[in-house]
Image 1 (cartoon, helix red, strand yellow):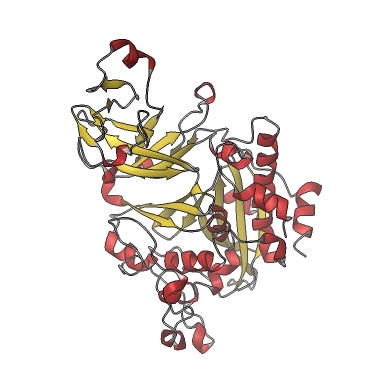
Image 2 (cartoon, one colour; image 1 turned 180 degrees about the vertical axis):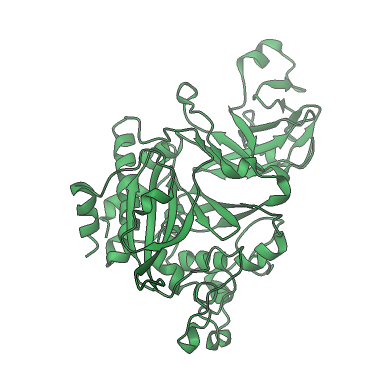
Length: 439
């Protein structure tokens, strides 16, 4: 478990908090490029790291990201006019370019004033169907990180965006808790569970499909130059020579809060980005070796039901007010009474409350990777608290980093499955102490 103080340290993400400063070291996804499909599209309101921003695409097709409130009297630019290569406040007509420069001052046409004042603006990149920004000091702006999905043909990629009223860390931790896949996602992971059997799910787009029926995998983490690799090792029977087999499911953690999940023909790159302390934005980027069927993926994730989620506002709508839309009668044949992997993950995180008290936990060995995740993030928060540069992504090109699900003979070194990226050796004393806290 975590102390109350450390739980607060990891959870708070405002501008003056250690974790807020840590997140501000990275390029972060802010919205979909498709939310501004053409020049002078409607602006998009953004909540990121407890800051209110507005994104817009100008008449030349370039994206700008500004503070939401007009620096004149504080009216929202998100309801403004996007026109003539700028965004114009409705209140008094002040117009700003993508760099924040004032282009027009209808009620105070003073050139000197225009030169002195700018709206706060942030650097922007577009790649892989997403708009990205960096909120930290300009002098410390890092290289832009590249992921494999950025090189995928557009028809082989699709993206889902969810706003969930929960702290970011609850969503991140769920992504590195491999034992929950076998249980929470029983319908997708191990068909036949109700009858006590196991039938492998052969759907090649399903990231929840497991090769074996093992509910208590052996888990481990090894640090890298981008974060760490985690592995869940499950007993997988024997081969033709009666040698024991193990299934090895490898998931990378990429600073500050990204994971990649494997499916047979696709990869799911998931970005969990804090909107503020009790709200999170998830971008799920799916890409693969063949065209991505968006409708099929929406059904797989449980995002095909407008009672839970819609394209119009991207909000995950289930709450305690409707008991998260859970169908209790359906539970006679299905594990959760919910439908879809992301639907189940989001409901579980929401059920904990907007910011869970981790000082009340009782952890077990299956939580070792979650413990390691917290350890790495606490190190980063402590460094940021001291004014030091926290851990960062050492390699800007991560196109070779992906997730893996392979079966080998017992004892196979799973680190051979993945690109090296400075992977650490066997867990040393410091890592072993983290492991021991779960016992």
